[in-house]
Structures are given as C-alpha cells and as structure tokens.
Image 1 (cartoon, rainbow, N blue to C red):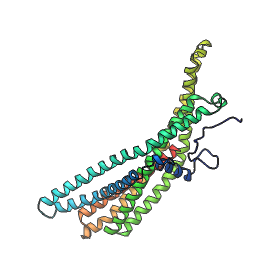
Image 2: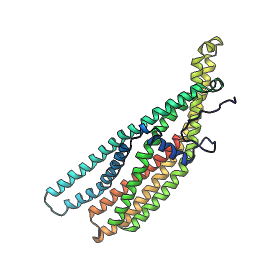
Image 3: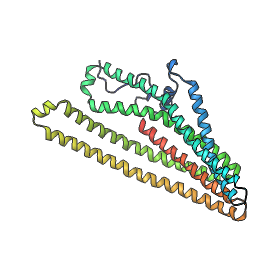
Image 4: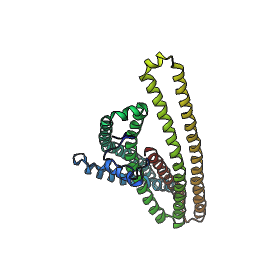
Length: 334
C-alpha cells in the first residue's frame, strides 16, 4: 500500500483538483453540508426558517435606527408636544434593544445547527486518522497533526457562522439600505455608495488573498513549534540520555523566532490594509456629506434628514467592514 500523505475528510467537500486550497464551490458544498446534513435525522428545517425570519427582522430594525434618530432631531426643533420626542426616544431605544436581542438569539440558534455538524466531522476525522496505516503515524509529527485537526474543527464553526450570520445578513442589510437611500434621498448618493462598495471589495479581496498566504506560512511555523514541543516531551527520556536539553530548547527557540518573524509580517500587512480601507470609507463619507450640505441650506432636506443620512452611511460602512471580516475569516478557515 502506498504511504498516505494527508488526512482525508471522508465525504466532506474538498478541492476537486487535488490542490490543498479549496475552491468556491467546495466552500459552498461544505457550508451546505453543515447546515443541511446528509443525515435526515440531523436536519432542522424549522430552525433554519426561524433563523431566516429573525435575520430579516433584525435588519429592518437596524436600518430603521437612523431614520428614527433623524425624526427625533426634527421633532425637537419644531415645538411639538413633548410626547412625540419622548415616543421617538423610546422607539430608538427599543430598536437598539431588538437589534441586540435578535443578534444573540440568532447566534444561539446557529450554534445548535453548527455544533452538531462539528461533532460529527471531528469524530469522523479522528476515527479516520486512527484507521490509517502505521506508516502514516510513523511518518507524521503528532504535534502538527493535532494542531491541524484542532484548527480545522474551529474553521468549520467559523465557516458556518460567518457565511450564514455574516454574509447573508450583510447582503440583506445593503439591499434594504440602498432601496431606502434611493427612495428618501437621490440616485447619485446611492451610486457613490455603490462605487465605494466596489472599490472597498476589490481592496479587501486583493489584500486578503495576499494575507491568506502569509497566514498559511504562520500556521506552518506554528505547527513546527508544536511538533518540537510534543516530540521533546514524548521522548524526554531520550533527550536526557543524550543530554540534549539545551539543544532541544534552542530548536524550540529558533522555531519560535521563525514564527514571530512570520507573524510580524502579517501584523504589518494588516496595518496597511486597515489604513487603505479607512481612506476609502472616510473619503466616501466626506464626499456624500459634502454633496448633501447644500440641500440643507436650501431647505430641500431637514437637519434630521441630514443626520439620518450620515447615520445611515456610517451604518452601511459596518456591513462593508463585515464583508471584509467575512472574507478574511473564510480564507483563514480554508
């Protein structure tokens, strides 16, 4: 039998061309397997429908917040009875509470879906590793293998959560926000925001693709450190017999230095990424608000409407940043 060189995930989706980097279709297949199990007894259609309804409700509350805030400001400046401003303050608080409650409820429900799949795949992978021929276990380092299995288990949960509770809610929120933006303000503002989103996504994809390769090198260095530590402790008797304690410690120190150097490259690169993205988003915000100020001066837009627009733009930037986080976490999970 030829030697086995890598752990198979059994029936779980993986790259079809034999490469170590899964393709997009493999990612969707993996998420589908987590959410809609091949085992009929593990499927929870009612739970998924409930999560979907909560997602839409949550985004309605989130997008409604800036407009409630703007209406509150307008109501304070026109001499109305105190009841209306107080009612709007109460509505604003209720919207924020509803957003927080719905977010946490969805996280809890999603855990019920993903943790069941994670338990199953972890058990499958562990059993598969144990059934591999002895040559595999002799040729592979236990520390790095354990680290890879643990990292893969965490990645499964990340993939499910960021795809269903990250990507889909962001798309829903952006669609609702753009519809309201065109209806309440003008098409130019929506086009500028759309251009900002395209530019932002291009920057995120380019930066995160490079960062993903750097993170892969960091993971390799981390596995090397784990290998050395586990080997040193597993063969402590041999190390002492040959008085190799100092040499073993130096090997670990050298591996840690390599890990530190690679991790610092990721940190520096991430700093440049964040600065570039901040310039894109801040520039867009300044342009949009500058175009809106004359409308307030001419009376075409109220002060509350201006504040609502600013709050809506800032709110839209959050899901844009969320898309960047989703992209980065998906790349880190693959």
